[in-house]
Image (cartoon, rainbow, N blue to C red; front, side, top):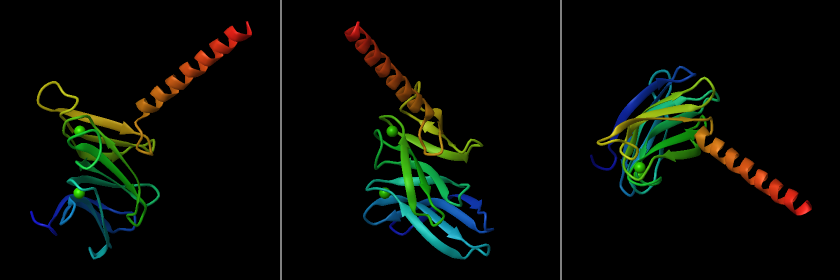
Amino acid sequence: MTPGDYTVHSLIQTNDSGFALAGGKIETSSGMEFWLLKTDANGNAQWTQTYGGEDDEGASSVVQTIDGGYALAGWTGSSGAGGSDFWLVRTDASGIMLWNQTYGGALNDYSWSLIRTTDGGYVLAGLTCSFDDSDGDIWLVKTDGNGIIPEFLSHHIILILMTVTLIAAIVRRKSA
Ligand SMILES: [Ca+2]
Ligand SMILES: [Ca+2]
């Protein structure tokens, strides 16, 4: 592939009877990028957006969110924990990025599928070489509506509770 080339990996119908297509676009300066194209009901392009860093990233999935925005998932080599990581990008209805999150370990991790869950969160599925037994495992990542993995959240809550308990114990000892 050369600069200007595209790949398409995902197609959905949007809530205005148009379509959204997601994949990768090769840029001259920044390698492959996430690429999102919105069309009207007749397939006429309305707008297109790209997202990414200096290294390669590719979008494998797009879903529409309740507010008319979009969530794209795929992989990025530009940020994260090392190699490629799962990458989740949330946009508004015009494709402007609102936030993004990476998930993964030191080796290559590729997200190939994305769904929106009934609780307003997301589930990404793909391949992980970071958290596997030998030559790659399937990896499911469940996040809340902000792309945060709830386990991380509960770890933080436990840490806060432990800190509060410790401070309370110190205060009790000092006042005793
Ligand atoms: Ca890139
Ligand atoms: Ca990784």
